[in-house]
Length: 51
Image 1 (cartoon, rainbow, N blue to C red):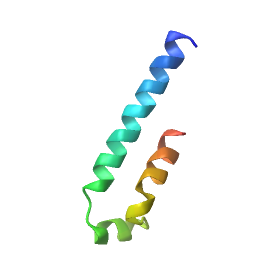
Image 2 (cartoon, one colour; image 1 turned 30 degrees about the vertical axis):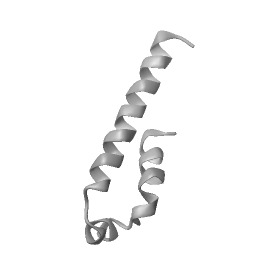
Image 3 (cartoon, rainbow, N blue to C red; image 1 turned 60 degrees about the horizontal axis):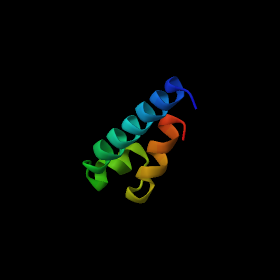
C-alpha cells in the first residue's frame, strides 16, 4: 500500500465520520425529509465516500 492510497483512505474515513456526525445531529423529522432513517445513517455515509 502506497502513502497516497493510505492518505486517500484516511481522508475517506474522515469524510465518513464527519457525515455520520452531521447526520446524527439532525432530528428524526429532518432525516425523514431527506428520506433517511436514523438506522441508515452509517450506510448513507459509507455510500457517500465510496466504502
